[in-house]
Image (cartoon, rainbow over all chains, first blue to last red; front, side, top):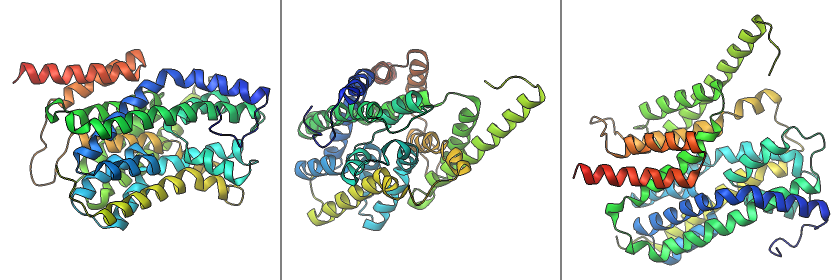
Length: 250
Length: 111
């Protein structure tokens, strides 16, 4: 556990760390599968092994990497790849905004490290657990987060590097890229935990499908806007309904 | 499948994508004290991750270019089966395994 030496280890941090590793353990195989698939996809798209290695170690963002591959193949301009990468990564801006109250007291190096290593999985595990916490930024909370992101990094990078060096052996007929899609589905389904979110995702799906011929992956941006608008509308309609029935709020 | 891309070009791609990672994941942890997100905006942005993920998945699963009818391939029923497995079991690994097996089975049956 010496990979993050700059964070003080006290009892509470260690407790949180242990809880975090326990929570993420069940998801590591899925992360690894997605990492393997992404590694294979990079070399199958024509990146050299060293370039794919640089990409996985520096970028560490599966959805952005997978999004960039078709753009690289068509020789898209760098600014376009940058813009597409930003849009695909937009969800992490929301994650960072939600995590900010827990990390704001830390020195900038640790904030940089905690931010850079944030994953979907760590956020999805952290927020239900500490979202309602009265005191934010305790050592236990930071420990829990580190307990999620540290095993997460290894479980992504090791299979990804494996995929880079074994990728050329995988037959295309096995449709290895479909495993990446299933991994994305597995992240998405648990997030749909209520009618407003369900309606938001239906709206996003319809808009993304209709708008996909638009350039610059503009359809994705429109889908996000449609999803947010629909979600907010559904939430307001829901609270109006429950207010009329004068039921206690859940 | 040759590694035929210009090395400098791919290096630039890696650099800008790494920048994307840093900006979106760590950026707010640096400006958050001076740029507080209003509660309304925060609530609104709660729906963004799901919308983004769906927005990536749907066009990948059902591609069309605007010129031709969308091609429905065997990945669609396999993905629907995967969604069902995930909703029932909450296991990502089971979802990936079941989805892949379903796709291979369908390909083998209809080959």
